[in-house]
Length: 399
Figure 1 (tube, rainbow, N blue to C red):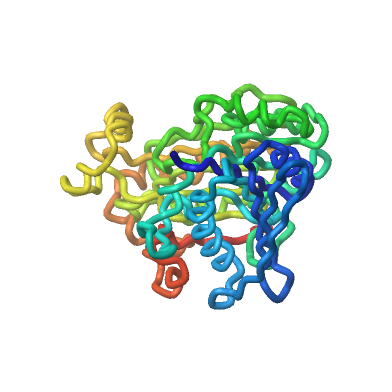
Figure 2 (cartoon, helix red, strand yellow):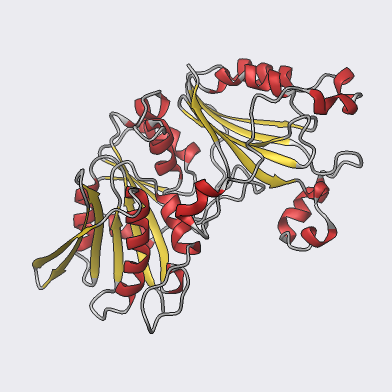
């Protein structure tokens, strides 16, 4: 039986949650922190009412803090699985670390541990039981709508929104109905819990469709978990769908509409001039990212199509177009202060006109401001993360 792993993420109020989880017998807490020189790994257990702590310093792997933490954690999880005194593992993430890449690594990054271990990912020995994200109700919304940057090029909004969106349980430090209304639309598969008391009960009663470390399929439903679609004051979840492509320059010009008074945009995009590749677009606050969502089914060979799961093929067939196949745009936009009508009008205006639609021979000549999002990542980008799936992304703030 695999050992369950609980990840705890967030900028503040994570210590009380970790402390509460530690009280369950058989729990071991592991955390990695960079002190400016080395990464320090700490492991804590509670045995017979006494805290036992073990600490080790780790040399940076090719100068990268993230790689050092990831590589050490993947091996450590497999080793801890073999300890008789460890029934579950709590991974206490650093404040600005996102849980999704860690979960992907657990499931997919092959590691070599030692003689007696089969080479493979940590998921051979452990499973993601839950992701818990701790939020400060008084500051989270302003971070999620803001433009403050981090040293690594991400924005605070991208991190705090990503942490909340990927959670199975969101823990608020105090009740806030407005923040809860946002979270019910951002993270409909997560239980919203206030305070530390009862956290074990929340973990024992996750929703049936809780993520448990699973990432979204970019071609899957965008409204998984059935979030509320009615507005609550300035909070509204917009759906935008289109069966004609965007003009790349006009779409680029209207992106500012998605970066002010908007908490989250997610969706797959059909760009004129890109007949094969779907573009994935997401924003959080004032941070924007585009990447490849893979090929449209209509662009796949018969051999490639055989590897596509039946659910995606069935959904595509429901709206299949004789000329364009499954090509389409589907986006969800969670707003908090922006005007839904303006966003819809801007996106509608960025679609090809009827005249442009009748001239597909011209589409390849349109300038594409989105750059090389569709290309494979270069070797330099993946050298430090061999065997980890990646896409070249185009990140940036737009003021």
